[in-house]
Image 1 (cartoon, protein in one colour):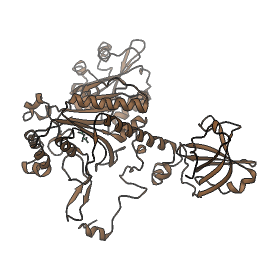
Image 2 (cartoon, protein in one colour):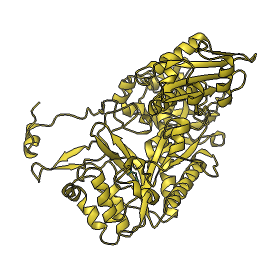
Image 3 (spheres, helix red, strand yellow):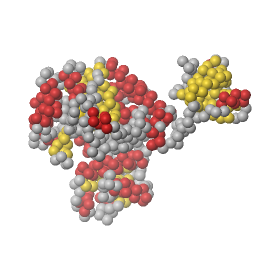
Image 4 (tube, protein in one colour):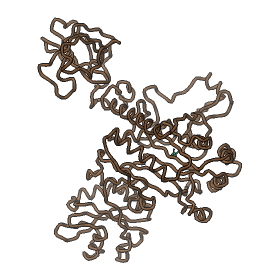
Length: 577
Ligand code: ASP
């Protein structure tokens, strides 16, 4: 090897040893009599010392040059307690420049001066920075722990194909033209869903895969067109078995990578999540749950409340002292088109026991007191009220609650609040297509006790489906599947497939169900997001070595790109742009 040690390794007990180190020049300080060079690699930084007589060695050294230095380890005069190698330095005797470097377009430091786009373009340089290195190390550690844990439970990691068939359900597919089958296309998998179910039919009763999935969706912030899932499936299990198995996996991950112990995760049914938080992935790190004051506020001449289906209030502890400006800002927030409220009503529960609201004209102090009581508000609290159609008011109040949570510092990324949400609806109405869509996917089984509603009130049927939520983010979801051909066919009917379409799209699965399909179910956890949350950050991009930007481009390799005429001809593709 070209080195005897790494740059993070040497300590005071190595003093007087002859060593050879390799790495990148982080920094050079020429003090005349001496020149110091900070040498960096993945493992750390070690200080090199050159005497004045060696100035011809260091003269031309620039930032990010790759060098090999040999010398003796010495105790430092002035120690640097900020780095583990800070007690020692290397008195260099020989130096080889292994490669030069142009001046990098941004500084390779923890807080770089480079803008997002520039750093993406020079991702290989950005990856030299500590924050990114730590993220990738965490990702590695998590994947190792996932494999160790699932292996210990007899799960087999089995690869499934990337070139599969396009299906109309779910998001848009990325497609790949087939040269050998003119006019035909493969699709890249949005998930290995049907394959893992087939593996259950094959008898591999515990499957997992840390697997890339592809979805051609309009990129909202923090979505990647290709992303990684911890994908799992089990046979001969109930919903409870799956929840317990993957809860214990998460407990293991928290324990081994964060040193945090959990006994068990709380659970909440979908209906309660919607009722109390207005969303199916509540952030339960803080309270401010919903109070429905609809009945209290009606009939007092305030038309907005009188006309509303629902009036929802939340209580912000100790916020009665919010200024006019703060209240105006919050009103502007809820009026943004993304939130969509018409206005925001507040009620101050003053320290002196009086009440002051923005609708004092319509409500007496006595009535306001009743609001406060229903919201469990105490003196010094501030109540916010939104109204409208139930679903809209819930959504708006959820937005406001999360916004306030951020503002009040109640969403500390170092605090972890996992939560299972269960009993999701099987179907959701899609306005655009004028029909029901599967809320999870078409293979999810309805709850037996709701089966009688399937034809009459399909929207009310609950599914054996569950999500794992962490700090208000969905990190995974799964279901107990249909394993009966007749039920699966009925489901396809309900989703608007003709018999022929169902057979053409999913015939392989329907057929497989006729050869002894065991009861089965599974889950998939979003691995990139899990890494980001464990890293205490919100964006997944910096937990992926080579991510795409917000327009789905890889700006480093400049993809996607056109291909030449010959390639297009071979693929029988005519581009008409
Ligand atoms: N395949 C599903 C998904 O990607 C997860 C599952 O049901 O296991 O969301």
